[in-house]
Image (cartoon, rainbow, N blue to C red; front, side, top):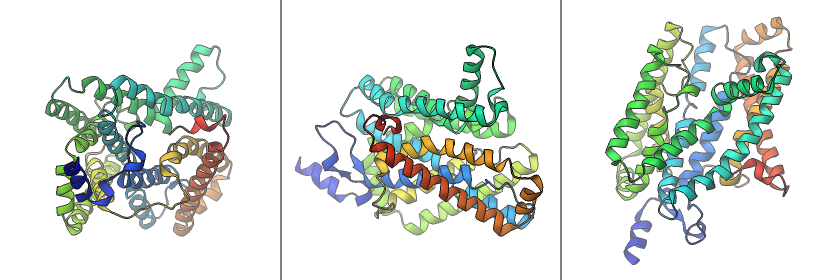
Length: 373
């Protein structure tokens, strides 16, 4: 016991568990790096979805700056898979697979079903074409719900996550770790190459096994946490920044290449360069020993609520934007400062409104379940 405590205290502060949140209550330990990643990853997701609100600039110099601004925040999705895998690794040391799975269903999947239905109603009401117009049967409406929510909306993340989650749990201690890693890694590489080959649908929202490797990798990080902590403690900040910088340059080069090929996938999350970039950003965040989020935000309790609510607000914003005359929008896109400012203002407004609504719902006893955890 004493030896274990000494090992724990020797780790960087960001990798230590908050003992007050762990133990016999069966709750997940509260790691500083997990909360830091949660906070920044959710900012990155809202950022990527809203920063292009004004459209692409007509000036090449501004367009290039827009691409850089968007790409530098393109790490959120893989980040969430990594920390979820880490917490999964810890959770399985205290409870069984089935119990852990259904606990996540209650905390994640049930609220997701509620808000995805709300989003679909808004989407169909604001843009009938998105829902295929009026339907002759509930069956047709259900088909459109699955098509748009599961594969084409921002809400794609949760069903994809649960598919990966169920697969990792099913193979836990039944298939050697290295075999799982090789197979899951091959899936990620395949989807990265598929952006060019289009053997299957290339959109990352359709990459059903494109992210399972990062859930597994997070789990392995927990399993080998002491060796990982020692390595991270020994590697210099300069080296990590160089690695992240090289990865960032590769992502920009791949964006340029994909735009030249007119694939429409220049911001695809599973681009090989973006997979590398996302991992390096997470390593930088984990190495940081400072709290990177304000005390006014309960990152653990409010992050998922922001994810669930912001697509609905964005849908409303888009509906308003689409009613602006084309000439006005063209003028905005021709003004570099204005189009970037509009994107930043949209991001700030949507993030803050999502956070505010999440805080309000947390205070209503009968609605608290809707924001999950």
